Length: 286
Image (cartoon, rainbow, N blue to C red; front, side):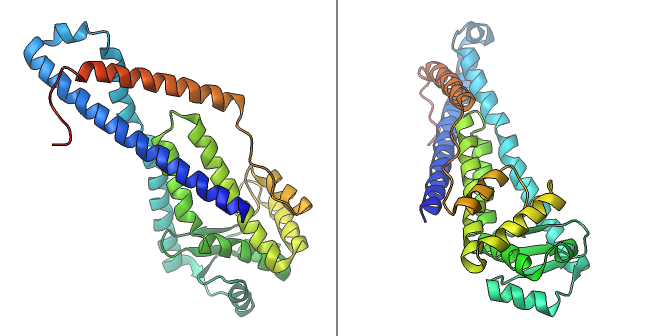
């Protein structure tokens, strides 16, 4: 439970930072645009160009525009995945064998989709009604005990609405890409999701089947997004070996320095924007 609480706090913190940054930058950009428009009409472009605060204000406007790209990327990816999932269910889904369906029901999988694909993979998709997707390759690669552990792992993702939580984390991090600390928070959240799902699988099936499935899938499908892949594999194995949750990954010096630089640059932009906008009486909330 401690890990789940920590993940939730990290997600709330990341979302709060993204919302605060969004409101602050949007209001500052609005004031800058209105102030520059007013000054252009009264003073002309030559006077504005000589203002030492102009570079910082323009940098802020550029930041507001460019940050929409990394924030929109996970939304686009999710939309494509959802579209692929609907097409797969309609055209490529296979009848789930009765033993697999019974096993899925036993471990709490409410919606299961089987795809004819040699790639060994299991994952959960869907923001409102998550669905567990497995491939025929997965059924071939694992025995019943290991398959039950994998299905329970994915059922935990579905129960916790992890696809939605993951999307929120990725969008919030993209919205604040100029602060490496938010990337650190996102990695903590994603790792916490996998560790929590592993603990749920261990609770239902014991440590040995989960470890066997994790090792098996890491060996046969090391680059596939799913149960047995990803850079967090070491932490997941450590949790299985020790029976205890591994500590949060430490924040590296590179993240600390990058965040300090980002905050300094952001402060410069906001102060420059304030100097540009102060003479103007135009408001953005009217």
